[in-house]
Length: 289
Ligand code: FAD
Image (tube, rainbow, N blue to C red; front, side):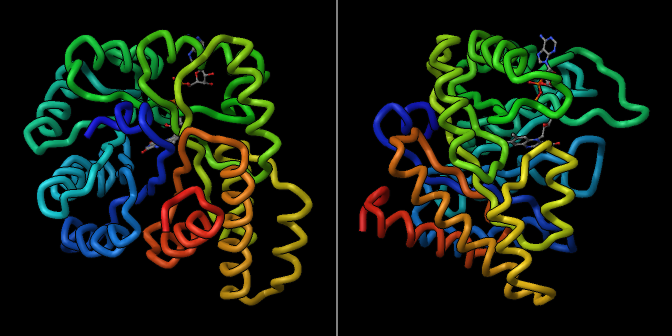
């Protein structure tokens, strides 16, 4: 089902998975998603690895089996950095044949040796998909603190407006650790007359190393509360993971109270993360019991 149609009726709850590598990646994804399905997500998004890495071919296959075998509602990611229109056409055809109704249209991160071909920005891909595949719902990325390559927040909002005007049906946000950032972002969208629904992406932190990587790859700021929680967990990896899931649940509870369009959990292929976040959203009344 088109995510835009769901968002028109209700607040959504969804998960993101990244295709596992290995001998039977599709089978592994099926096993993972059959566990995630117990939480009745409105959709599950499947990441795409640009540049021919091991799992890029599996995104549409996994999204397809989620729809066909598990009766779940998948969204397949797609990056266009070095894609041609023909590449995009064949990817979209595969999605449509497999009963996938949703695609997340992304530019992808710049990589050495990769050159732009038919698309420069995600907005070009969004316009292209809207014109060639109007039956698909098209999502796009948004960044509550601005994209890492973009020097200031105001310009980032201008670029977001271009994606909204290109026809993005909804946005999914980059992870963030302070709910106040969402309030500032929502006000900026209102001022820019961006009315596109936003699904807010929440990722539990798992370790000091992981959170440092996040800060440098996507520019997310790390609040003192998070640093203190990690410090209190000390060197115990399990204590750090528990602290991360607990913090994500507190964030979700706070966001649920703000009247959001959707909450999207980066479950990192862990059913326990899906279960914990589901339970807290039931507890606060965001999801039905
Ligand atoms: P764009 O919207 O094109 O923006 C890229 C940069 O260009 C930004 O700095 C923007 O401000 C600037 N810009 C945009 N339009 C213009 C313009 N007209 N003129 C000048 N500058 C402009 N990556 C993957 O490889 N695989 C994934 O599966 C994946 N999933 C993601 C899911 C989510 C929810 C998010 C938030 C990100 C995801 N990414 C993924 C990462 C994403 O590919 C990177 O953040 C990438 O650097 C930017 O992609 P974009 O679609 O936001 O690009």
